[in-house]
Length: 131
Image (tube, rainbow, N blue to C red; front, side):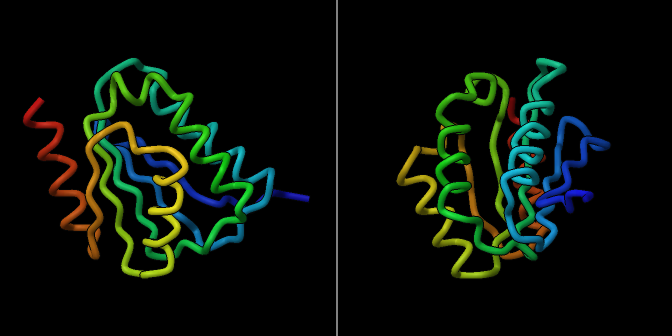
């Protein structure tokens, strides 16, 4: 059985990376694949910024929220190389989930929540340009 992606990670505009949540429910397989793709963003060991487009996101299982918090805690390369993360979250429930994750583990880099992709992208490019 093929795993349907929880999120897609697009590095074609590097150093700006876009992570787009697909609207699929989180499973152990697709959530671990998503975290592995996030890890892979740091392979080049270069500064970057990330836009997380959660416009279509569904609430991940609590166990996956904890996995995400642990990933934030353990990912030392993010602290060194990520210049900022912009979140596109028009849905109040998903905004609440992000806050819950950050209660479990503080976001280690500058971040901002936006209601549109265009605003998030502009902010992320600004983070790249000022560094």
